[in-house]
Amino acid sequence: MAAIDLGGRWSELKPLLLQGFERARQFRNIFWQVKHLILLAMCELQLDDAESAFSRLQEALSLISSDDSETGRSLRASIYAALALVHANRGKFRDARFYMEMAGGLVQTLKDIHGMTRLALLETYINVMADEDFQVPEFVAMALSTAGGSGWKGTELLACWLEAFRLAESERIEEALDLLRRASELARAMKSKLAEVAV
Image (cartoon, rainbow, N blue to C red; front, side, top):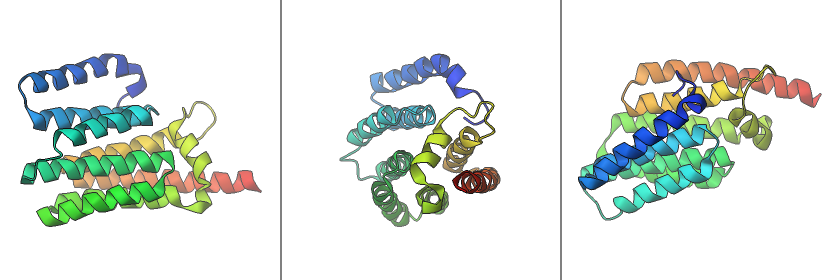
């Protein structure tokens, strides 16, 4: 997602994702229904549409609420992690940590090493967002706004975090960590700029 202008391509991408979801539903393939809903939610979150992202994830959760198979638990862990991300970007850090703990409990029972790595990335993200030194509401607003000519790196920062999360989901851990390091550099720059503005 960080590699493309999602806002400019969303009118093309959204129908394709919805078509994939509908096709999965026609074939009663729960796995791919859930996967499409999670991807839709993550795209909508990057486009500052947390409400739609939350609704997608709730729908995904309802599809597998009674599935206690290993696959069902793995999908629930992914949904809980995505819900944690949504709540973190809303500034609701208590809810974000609640869903992160729910996801953590599942990946531990599954002994999913990659899942634990993904949650470590997510926990770092939530802790950065919740840092009082970042003046959370302003920081979230910047991260979700268009950088434009103002010099702020908020959009790039959010894109880095979301892309790192997506890469980790695909078990591309080294690439995820590279983006995470880039995001940390941007976060430090933003924190420094906020300190200058506050003076």
